[in-house]
Length: 137
Image 1 (cartoon, rainbow, N blue to C red):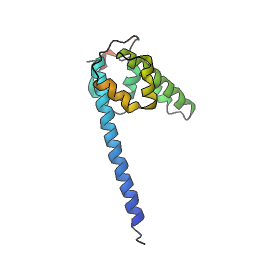
Image 2: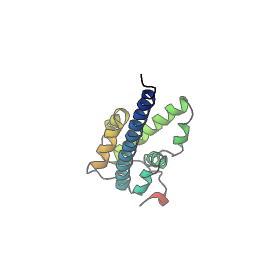
Image 3: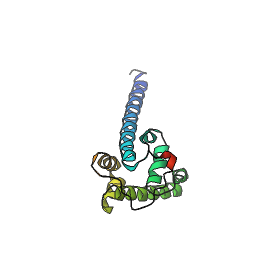
Image 4: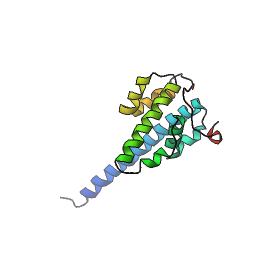
């Protein structure tokens, strides 16, 4: 048995994880930038880690600092997820989707992002967005 095979196996998996992470980052950033553009938010903010989530929460009428609550184990993470889903529900409504569209955000979030990014919907929110003027296009 070759003593290097364990290292090669770990290296292979590390490379796969890194490549998958980069692809996911590019996908989410691209889709979020298109959603931001529809909502009048500067699209470049979708490419900044953490800021993208902060702005999505604000776009959905939730304070961006709910992101920080997610750092608290278990209870904070549950609170954060609920607030994120509420924000995604409101973003969906603001982009002319029905209320049940939030089920995609909960179960198949990449599909939720993709549909909102590429469809022909326009931004007409029924809630107050908390995105500051300085972050708007």
